[in-house]
Image (cartoon, rainbow, N blue to C red):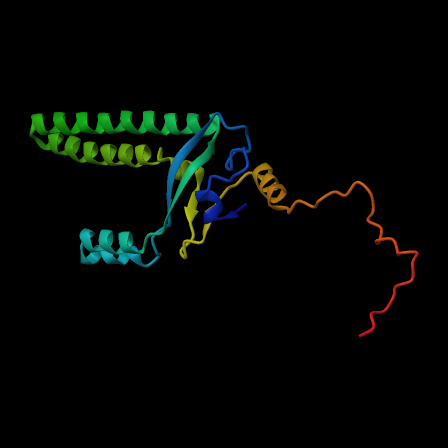
Length: 189
């Protein structure tokens, strides 16, 4: 389920006190920088050079600072797991690169190639520990909304409940003002 929240509400820290991704009570409120996804055509710019891609994507990026994003135990565990596995695999890849360079023969070249791909895989997993990736929240292309993919139903309900306008409760029905028992005199001029 994709839930859309106005960017101003996120920037003001006015989110329900429930994890948007897992629907659990937060263990902390994280300060996050949410960005928009690059346009679908942007990877074609890599042909022109990585720097052109980076410049265009950075120029078109919309950003929302979330001062109080609800962060639950599952979010924390997923971040720790991705970071631990990613850095471990990255270290193994770097070790294979060093051993492959030290051997220097055909088997060393194979170790170099394997080390490169293992290190790349570790880097990708470690980058998936980014809080924005874990929350699955991205700014819309126009910068007006934050879209939360894979949002929990409980968060969506809490968000709808918080958005309802408060209706003032009156203790008793209002009566019209009582009519004066004296006849009204008309002014003569």
